[in-house]
Length: 352
Ligand SMILES: *Cc1c(COP(=O)(O)O)cnc(C)c1O
Image (cartoon, rainbow, N blue to C red; front, side, top):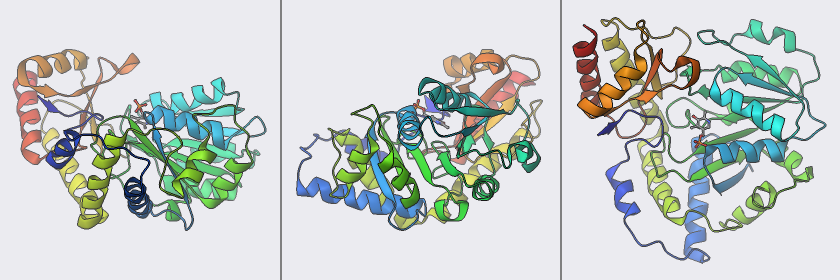
């Protein structure tokens, strides 16, 4: 079975090898050194501002989203949420649950987020923006440079869920004026699910340090403090930390530019081949992480089952209103062009 999913994704042999080893004890100098090496590589890959803070959480990506909302914001904030799919909606639900005042900029399926849509939110005393850089439920890649400028103009903090963008789309906290970014282990990092990560700029960390939170496990202050010596407040998913150490080092050695180039080439290879088929690719900006495909005959879910059961291809189905309309083909993890030839073969066989 080949995974064309968006997490967990096809893992690399080196990662699978590490996953088979005994888990060592972690309150040691050796483990601390591993963590500090991870921190350095991680901060360099997101082009983090000098003296940024780093947290390794044992939680899925949603845990990191909740942790960010809980620690960065409070009842005195007024938050704008870009809600263009199920992950944007999740940010909105988190604000609701944690009683953070917020408004949603709701983007219907098919619409591109543009500057003109932000107009009515200018000068309205918003204090922070919550956005998923790549809205994974539909594959739209938002223009974070535009949002960074918007936040700067309006004196807002920019909090970015880059769970499905990190390592497939260009991401620079410095250039894009991102105050906090978060991601998770099972997407383009292609590791086991279970770890998530937060990088916070010094000005965001200052706000976090002033904010009292009603949580022990999700108190970011203690994660930042512990990370100064390469530790976490509680037992992390130690095995995945070792998977991460190897993966980050190999990415840094290869160079992030080459990694992104490879992913963009793979995504474009597949998209070009789709052009001859009776299917549609939406025309909003796309992440390199996946290709969304619209099926005009509303048989998307049926095709998902057929691909899984008869062809050994695990494509990514959609939920809710788009369940019969859209399938997503993931490009994250250990994938090659010949894998996409198989998907194209499948489409040719069942659609023509
Ligand atoms: C996958 C994903 C998450 C995290 O989902 P979990 O299932 O909690 O790991 C968060 N945001 C985005 C944009 C995602 O793609």
